Each structure stands twice: as structure tokens, then as C-alpha cells.
Image (tube, rainbow, N blue to C red; front, side, top):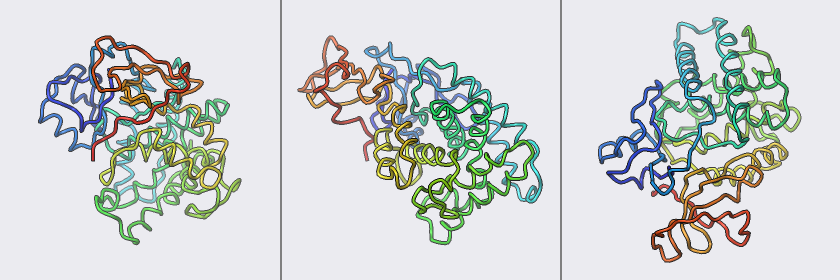
Length: 362
């Protein structure tokens, strides 16, 4: 299969992976044939990229970071819980189900991640038409746990980190939907309302049975920055908890690689470049380097153009050097389709570099 921008899809193409909605229901199955109406619907729902079947890349298998059943259960629990918290009738009460509901979920996610053959952080905002807040919460949990595993945290620390990451944006359940879902630019007053969500989240979690203060502080501090420019308290350096410094990276990365109503999703290498503009100032240098070393910056199946002028598809990622993948060359330097595509390992061809990546048309 290969990964294509929705803007490049053509009628007659067939899906390489299922597409889900926010209820976890399959909207389109593998091998479903696309038509104009389906492509327009994808664009309407904010899909930027999808996997497409291609005989030349049939051997490229893109595995999800967690099991399909885990993802479906997780999104259902997040959706049901966050919606209950959004109801005015539950304001001011204790939510004893948070720890019970989500501790087991975090442990299941950890088990799934430990069972993977590789240690790469893969792009996850593909083939899904679900609610941003729900998906974002799960993605940040998964990315953070992967980074925590690489950091060497023990099981108890990973559980606390996972809970903090999963619930880091829970304060947004107390922000009016008219602001959260606004498609135009926020006013200063509306942005100030958004900026209240870390403290609102901390208030929900700090006295919650089954939720550690370490996890609660992830909600409170994930927008703090190393140089003190963050919010809500302008904390600096070691004043910010270790977990929160990690989640600051994964939260920002996922936000940038997710389609929003006001902009298209960035690809991983683009998001990483933006993150690195804040290396040592906004984000902790050692954690950002660890993240960089375990991110598949060129997703499997993405189309790339090399400095030789040849065009191909990323078919394998080297865990030790993710910036030097194996590329299956499909077109020569003149743009002519090859009758016999071949694989070029950029780790062995050091003078060859990726010059361009297939992007969404404006």
C-alpha cells in the first residue's frame, strides 16, 4: 500500500486500510473502490492522507501502533467520559470512575506497545474521521508512553505518565463548545478562555481517587515551557515536572500532524523541524533528541522525490537512522514510470537524499 494525500486521489483507486468514524465504526473497508462522492466526503471530514492499494507496493504493510480493539475501546471510553464531564449537571462533583476506567486502558496500551517489533513512533492521524479532542488524547498517551519506554521509566512511572497524557486536555471539557469548535480566528477573550483548560483539568484530577498528583500535574503543566514563556504559571526548567516536559513535546507534535479546520496536517519531518526551533528554549533538549531518534519522519508508503530526480515510495524505515529509509523507485529522473521498480537503501547511498515529500495541494 502507499500513502497519498486525499487531494491526489482519483476515482477507481482502492483503499489500502479501513476508515473509521469517531464511534469506531468502519465507514470504508480495505479494497473499497473510491468515487468522486467518497473523495469529497473525505475532504469534508478533514482527512488529509489515506492508504491506497498499489500492486507495486503490496508488500508494504503498515501496522497500527496499538491493536484495533484497544483503539476502539479507548476512544469509546474517552468519548463517553469527556461527554459526561461536559454536562453542566456534573460540575463540582468527584469523578471516581476516572482512575478505574483509564488505569486499565493505559496498561492495555502499554502491553500493545511492548508487543511491537519496532520502537518507532509512527504517524497516527490517518484513515480516521473522529473527534479531535478524543483522538488527540489517545495519540498523546501513545506517543508519551513510547517515549517513556525509551526513557527507561518503570511500569509504575509509565502508568502515571500514561494517565497524565491521556487526561492532559480534560480541562477542555469545561470550555464552551462554541469556542472549542470555532472555525475562524479566536478573539483575545476566547483565547484566554482556552488557556484556562490546564488549571481546570488540574482541578478535576487533583482530588480524584485513583489519579496521582503526578498525573494531575500533566494537565496543569503541559503548556509550560522551559524558558518560562508558557502558561498558566510561567514555570521554568526543573519547575516543570519531568512528565510534563515530555508531554509538551508529544502534545505539540500531535497537534501539528493533525488536520484542523484552519489548517492542513503537517508531515512528521515538518513538525519535527518546527519543534526543533524551540529546542532548549521551549522544549527540553534531551527529550526532544530522544523523540527525534524514534519518530518515523518519513511514513511508510509516502511518496518522495530524491535529489537525483527519481520518485519513489518509502517501503522500509531503519530504526537506528529513520531519516535514511529504503525507497522503492517508481519513476526515473524524467518522470517516466519504471517497468521494473527497484529498492534504493539511502543508508547505503549516502549521497542520495530526500528532496521533496508528497504534500497536500493547497
